[in-house]
Image (cartoon, rainbow, N blue to C red; front, top):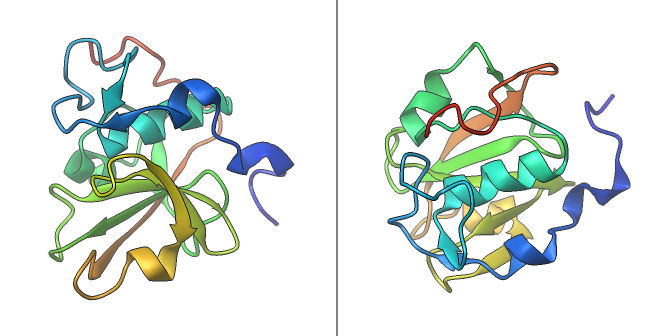
Length: 150
């Protein structure tokens, strides 16, 4: 049974859909929680989860992968799980996407520099993100609210 039953999990609100990729706007960057124009993949993913009522910890990739207080490892990914992929087999620096169901993910992609929804198998392929690092599910009742990290 999926942990989220909302049919709206695939919807990206307009204020997030218009974001462009900006690697300098990461979870610890000043103003990251209210980006005007750009953000990195993690900030986009966390804001999207918050839009859907979840409270993910605003952690960098390797910290997110190791976190057990606010998240748990989950496989296969379900809607609103965070999915981590990388060009190397390590969590440090991994790209973060949000599962929207049936093998699809939404993410703020460095290339083409905008929000993209695509099949996970297309994203996690040789020459792109060859390594599927894992998926994390925000625990129900997690309280890593806005302002926790800046």
